Structure formats: structure tokens, C-alpha cells
Image (tube, rainbow, N blue to C red; front, top):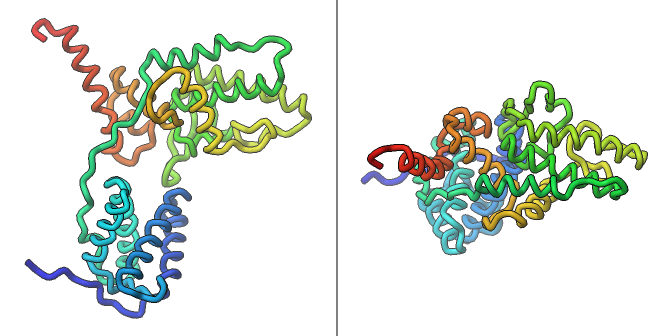
Length: 328
């Protein structure tokens, strides 16, 4: 067995300067999302703190990235496991280190990526929670039952119309939270029943807008216009979804909306916006949509990410087989 190699190039710039340079590269060149860049920064800082403590260095600035060994990374992963982190989270931290060291290698700071020599730990694939079709029907029929009556408070009418439109678009088009928060009027084509969405990595895609979601948006636009006319205020400028004060909606608000309404119709553990995105994908596959098309609508970079949904459709396939096949 050959001894594991160490990086050997000396004269690296200050470690924090290199981290900052890498994050700038990830943001501007790779066009990664702010949340991904924050995760990179956090993961790399945690590794530096571990490395500094393990080697009894003064501060993280004393760390020499060219002297990091494969064993250092494995010990870091072991410490994460001891702290109770799940294998998926540890794998993400290793991915951050691999991306960082790939950058250092490509820019000539180190000879090779030491992190690239570490095998990513296997972990059980998480099965995303989703609503069944009857729960979805119940969710949206609840809005019809609440209804709007003459004399209702304009603010209540606005919130009701906005929340329904948010839920309809999340389920009807499979958007991520960040995508629905940043959705602008110019991205909405009601006549063509399409949405133009900018997702992870600044990748743009066009997704269908179902009839129910389009109707909910039209109603919301009408209520929104009347509401801010009464208030003599601005309705959020280019953004589709706004608060009662006219400001942009934000992820926490979308989370509150989904928890509020999903709690009345389902017992799934995580009643978050992603549950509606998962439901969108699952119901499409159950209905016979092909995996590639669903992957494109979700904005996944590869089919492997979408395959997590296929386990659900297998149950549906077995059911259809039992009902239809003469010797099932």
C-alpha cells in the first residue's frame, strides 16, 4: 500500500484570504446560490477550527493548507460523527472541502486535491415527505369553503388570495422557496401558462403553470391591486408576492404559510414548502410523466437527484399491475 501523499507547494497566501477568494469564485464564476456559498464558508471554517485545535496551533491563521493530510480530513469527519451529525451532513462538508481543494489545485496553489482522496461516506437516501392526492384536493377545497364575502377586511382578503396563490404555484409548478420568493411579474406568462424561473446555479428554466395556479394568480393580482389602491401604497414593485406592507415576502413567511394550511390536511412530519414540491414530482411520476421531464421541471442538474422520487411510484406501479394483470 502506497503512503498517502501530502500537498507540497509552499508559500500559500493567508488561509482566510484564500477562503475569501474561493467564496468570491464560487459566487461570481460558478454562480452558486448565496445559501450554498454560506454553507461552503461555514464548513471550511469548521474544518480549519478542527485542524487548528488538533495540531495545537495558535489560531486558524496559522494553518498551512498545503500540509493538510488525508488523515486530518478523516479525523474531522469522525469528530462530526461524534457530535451527532448525520452522514448526509458530513458528506456535504466533505463536498465543500473537495470543491475548495479542487479550486486550489486548479489555481496552482497545491499540487493535488488532498480532499479528493477521501471517499464520500454512504448514507441512506432520504425519502421526501409528500401529500397524497386526496390531501391536496382537501387543501385547496378548504380555500373555496372559506370564500370571500362582501364586507370582509381587505387585508384578510389580500392574505387569503396571496397564500392560496403561493400554495398553488408551489404545488402546480414545483418551485423552490427561493424561486417563489424572487418570482417577478415579467417571469409570469398567464396567456401561455408558463413561468420562467431562475434556480440553483443561476440556471434558467421554463415550467408549466397549471390552470388552477393560473386562476389563483389572476385572482391574487386583482385583489392585490385593489388592496394597495385602498391603502394608497405600493405593491412590491416587480415581485409577484408581497407582504401586507408592500415589502417582498421571505422564506420564513412562506414556511409559515405552508405549515398553517398543511397542518389542517396532513400528518406528514415536515409541513414545509418543499413538501409541495415533493408532491408535485411524485404525482407527476405517478401519473406517467417520464423522469427526464420531471427532472427538467424541477431544475435538477442530473437525473440522480430526481430518482429519489421513483420509490414512491413503484408502489403505484405495483397497484396498477395487481389490478390490471390477469395473473398478478
